Each structure stands twice: as C-alpha cells, then as structure tokens.
View 1 (cartoon, rainbow, N blue to C red):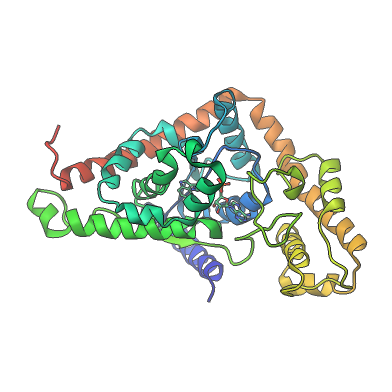
View 2 (cartoon, rainbow, N blue to C red):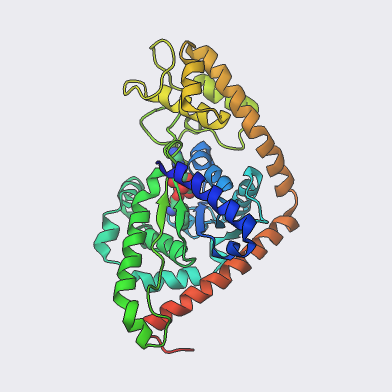
Length: 369
Ligand code: AMP
Ligand code: TRP
C-alpha cells in the first residue's frame, strides 16, 4: 500500500476511534511542516506540501509554521521578510488550514527552536552537512562570498524544528527527503549519546529523548516540474516567473503562462512517457487540481491536442485557485485576525517546545536552572 493510501486508512481509523473515544484525541500522532517565506508560493509548494496538510489536519495533531529563520540562509530583503511571513500565513489559511484543528505560527516566535539547534549542532558531524545536495546546489549558484555558514547548518535547524515538537510524520516534497533522513539520523544519534539509561540515572524519564520522525511524501505532486522545462523542478528561485504558477497569479497571468509553456510535437496526451516530461507534468497537475484519478485523466485527455488540453488545464487551475485567492485577500486585509492566529499558534507550540528543550538540557548534563 502506498504512503497516501496508508494515511487515508490511518485517517479513517483515527476518525472512527476519536468519535468513539474522544479522549483518544490526546494521543493523536503529530505532524509538523512549513514553507519558507521567500518568493511567491507556487503550485509545487501547494501540491507537494500544503494541499496534503489539509487532509491530515483532520486526523493528526498538526503544527504548521512559516519558516522565516530558514529564509535568511541566502541573501534576502529585510524590508520584505515580515510582509512575506504574513502573506505565507494567509496562504496557509486560504488553502484550508483550519485553526480549530491546526496550530499556525511563525518559526522565529518559538525561541526554543534556535536554542535546540545549538545543542543539536554539537552532535552533528560536519560531513553529514557537506553531503547535502541542496547545500551543494545552492552554494554553487550563490558563489563562496555569498554563502553564509547558516546555509550549511540549515538542515540542523530543520531537524530542530521537527524534533522539538516530537513529530511522528513530516509531509514534504521529494526535495526535502535528504534533510528528513539527516533529521532521523540525528535523532537516533542524540538518543544513543544522551538518552536511555544514562538519562534515567540523571533523573529523567528514561528512554528516547526524541521521537524519530518519518517523511510523508505524496505519491503524486511530490515533484512538480517547471513550465518551461519538464526536467527541472518548479522553484521559487528560478529566474523566470514563466516557469511557475504562483497561487496568487491572476486569471490572465495563469492563462498566459499555460499558453506559453513548453510542449512537444507528439500527438495526444499521455502520462509517464520518458520522452514527454512536460506532458506528464501538466497531466499530473491537472489530475491533482481536478481531483480526478490518473486513469480518468488519461482517458479524458488521450485524444486531445495541446490547444484543447491547455484550455482545459487553464480553466481547472483558475477554478481551483480563485476561491483561495478571494479568501487570501480577506485574511490579509484583517491583520488583527492574522496576528491573533499566529499568537495563539506560537503559545501552543512553545509549550511543547519548552518541555522538549528542558529534557534535552537535562539529558545533556546541564546544570538545572
Ligand atoms: P520551499 O519552497 O523550499 O519552502 O518548500 C516548501 C515545501 O514545498 C517543501 O515541502 C518542499 O518539498 C515543497 N516543494 C517545493 N518545490 C516543490 C516542487 N516543485 N514540487 C513539489 N513540492 C515542492
Ligand atoms: N526546509 C524546508 C523547505 O525548504 C522547509 C522546512 C523548514 C520544513 N523546517 C521544516 C519542512 C520542518 C518541514 C518540517 O522546504
């Protein structure tokens, strides 16, 4: 059974259990995830991460943050950071994150995160960080003089984000898989070095300090590709805006981007042909946006030419994104509401975070304050 099927089964079981035993809500598994407030949130972020969150929040204890501390790992605009942070929070809510179920907060508002990162960094071999593909790619692009140490230590902060909240599962796109593997290895290493009996002797509760989290990568949508090159991933940092659909793009911009996107000269539309990465990518986007199955889409589109398919895809995108855009506008024009949501989210998150941090200090042998 694939990951999402497992999640659906787990969700159904958890739902029926919590109807029977409301108190079991307390024992729900925990999920954390976040997006950086850099550039515009695009379809890759939505289909790879945010859209998955909406289903998960019904059956898991969920924490969704805006990872502003990660956003300063490359040169950035101080005038834009707080605006982008609010905007990203408003997008979460507009996409359907429900604050009666999930905590939404800003990463930097929970101080324990950076503190834990320092403790974790003492247990992280530098070789693990040097191996990270994202570090290699981003540092090559930025050039040595522009690469801060934080770009290298970024995965330790991400591990801290996850371990601090004792997360069971982390829904992310494919590109974050290596960072999740590092998080798991680091959790196991810290549990081995400082957990178990040693910690018990110090008066702790014994056992593991951290839960070892699992990645949750959606089977479809984990890697949404660029509109101008079906072999590169859709990305905030790609120089051309034509390469991505941003969630807040107006109707005419979406239509124009789809009209001008890369196609091929084969006839008909088909999934999974290695010679047709663009065709596969656009069909997958259509499948996820329309909520149809892969088989339904394959059948519906097999005899279409590019022109007909592009009209179908544009209409589906506009219909799907329009309500999100309307809701986003409402949320962003009510700063008091948004501040309230972020304040409440940070308070809930900090309570969990402080408990973990205090355990880690204790297990690592610090003088109790
Ligand atoms: P970022 O834009 O790096 O903050 O990514 C936020 C989330 O979106 C992470 O879970 C990524 O894995 C996911 N993501 C980013 N780009 C894509 C993409 N092209 N396809 C699928 N998921 C993506
Ligand atoms: N590094 C992730 C990205 O760029 C964002 C992120 C930071 C994250 N901390 C996290 C995602 C914790 C999930 C859990 O996409």
